[in-house]
Image (cartoon, rainbow, N blue to C red):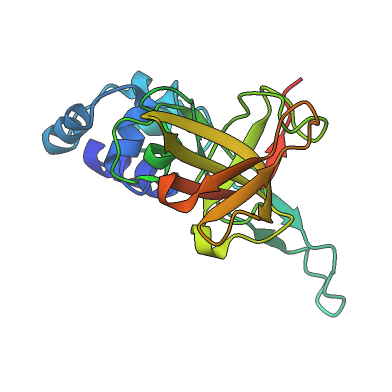
Length: 229
């Protein structure tokens, strides 16, 4: 297997929507990745140190198993009595979710922009059983305590503002007075009218916010969260 094929296999395995996303995980420019593919040559240590699931020997040579361990498998304990066959196994592919840092250029809008090179990627996460997600990021404050606290990781899926459902938790990015803000809260219809949405924090120390629809840059449903210890 040649080097460009190895890179293509990795991009396919991790479900990167663009080569630019893969380049961000590796910490190189999209142009550098393009050169690797065209020249059929790359630095394998750059790949297997960032993509820890991969078998370094496969990354180097293209031989052997691609992964250090196979996809998560679940044993089917129903044995076929008549021919005494061993238990069968079902393979289940788990999605690879990009973990984004937040910052001046790494906004929710950029995280959701598949061709963006601005969003800062710190790695990826695999969690079995999650609905389809567009990314994950860190909770930046304690507005959702006790449900969520600063430093937790939330998994999100882009959702149009006309499809928000009451009682669900959303991330909403909006611009006010030339300042971009990202807040999280439980969606509720606003008393200010159809041109607004309202997000309610769990923490009583934070105030509910009415946000004008024409100020919103991006919105996403929070599917799940994990809490590092």
